[in-house]
Image 1 (tube, rainbow, N blue to C red):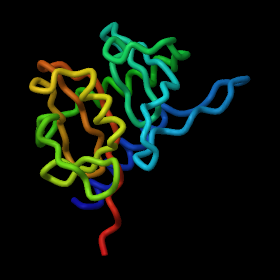
Image 2 (image 1 turned 90 degrees about the vertical axis):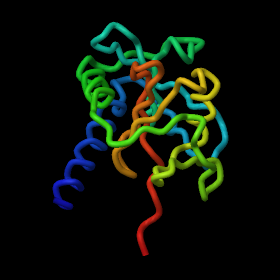
Image 3 (image 1 turned 135 degrees about the vertical axis):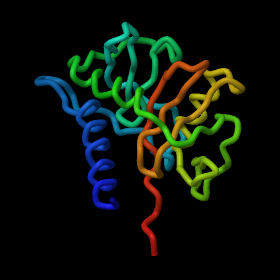
Image 4 (image 1 turned 45 degrees about the vertical axis):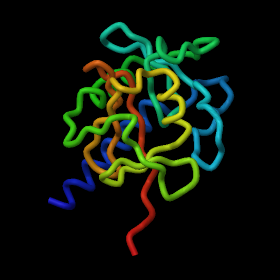
Length: 169
């Protein structure tokens, strides 16, 4: 069971990376994924035309509905297969749900944590708190390394990767 869980997590992480990685010929390399060690908003690197008609933007660690963040200019779109992967992540069943307002400060600077120990990038949480209705936004989680789905009024509006927890001692 533990081996299958690790394989499943690796597959999801790989899918997320494939969905948000790779540059096209002639383009500059992508900006770095937002890191909690540097307090600043995400830099939108690519857009995703979602199967439901919405457009998401991503920095590689957070993919969010562009209608919420209203980027100054829309980045270049990734291939449709990338949007399909993100759509699957948005529809993944969750085991737990936490209100955005219930997050606690994390142990590391610029991080937040759910009561179950899922560590989240403070840059992403700050952004989410600025664009979502705090009382209606929820985070759906599975495990400490699984993608976190952000839901508002029952609709998935973003998916983000958690901060990797420190190794067990």
